[in-house]
Length: 80
Figure 1 (spheres, rainbow, N blue to C red):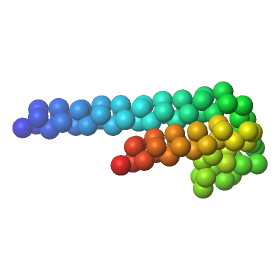
Figure 2: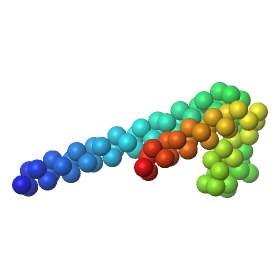
Figure 3: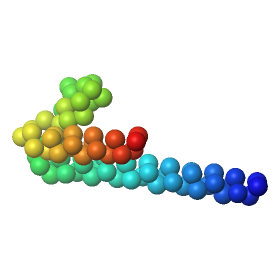
């Protein structure tokens, strides 16, 4: 019984770690895609990052829309 519980806890920890790494990979991939579309980080909008993720970036707008979509998708995937 104890062995099964320990194995279950290890599997749960590994699965949660894998999901977290996937979320981090998606997040940084979205940043890279956004920067490749000519975006740059705006220091003024760092404060509003939590309310609207795309507001972190400014530029031609394409990258910020891509980042917002990717971030929202990965955020929903991580928490649901």
